[in-house]
Each structure stands twice: as C-alpha cells, then as structure tokens.
Length: 121
Image 1 (cartoon, rainbow, N blue to C red):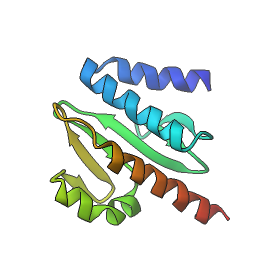
Image 2 (cartoon, rainbow, N blue to C red):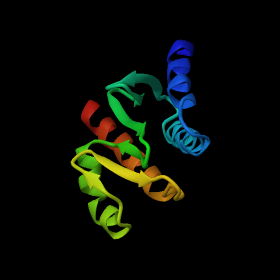
Image 3 (cartoon, one colour):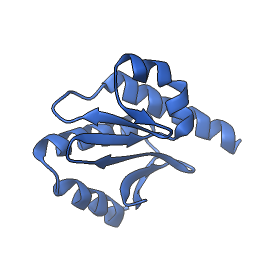
Image 4 (cartoon, rainbow, N blue to C red):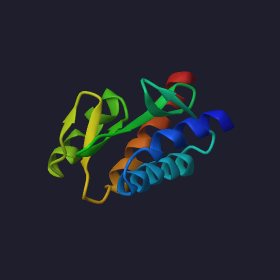
C-alpha cells in the first residue's frame, strides 16, 4: 500500500497547488465513504479500487476530470447538466478556478460503492 500511495502522491505533486488541494479532497471523500478502498495508478490516473475500479481522477490544465464509470454519469446526468459541467460517457469535468461540487462527487462515490457491492454478491 505504501508504494501505491507514493505513486498517487507523486502524480499529484506535479500539479498546481489548486489542483493538489482538489485531488486531496476527492481522495479524502473516497476514503471517508469507502474506508476499505485501496489506491493504485490505472490508465495513468489515480484510481480507487474496491472489489473493482471504483473511481478515477486526472488533472488537466483547465479542469479536473472525475471518472466514476458510465453508469454513474448516466444516473447523475440530469444534475450534471443542471450544473452545466462538461461530461462524456464515463467522465465529468470540474473547471479549475471553481470549487468542487462536494455533494455531487460524494453522491457518485456512494452510488459506485452500492453498485459494486450489488455486483459482487
């Protein structure tokens, strides 16, 4: 686990302070909601693993990408649209210079946790 954490820390450390703070918040929220989660780099992104890949994030010059899988994007599409975030099949973009939508991100993490638990049964 220590090596994996260092890899994610190394990933985060190359970005601006603003992006580091945002990535650390998402990391905290994932661990708060899914204490059993493990961390790794997958698809060259910080990835949180709980019985399968749960969520990923990646930093970009203009936004932070959050990847909760296509099912979560579909489940929260109306809210994502209402808040005017750019999104695609499995991702949503949170613009730099704006606060992260804590409630939406936490809801998507909870959704994924429940979805994974129901699959694994």
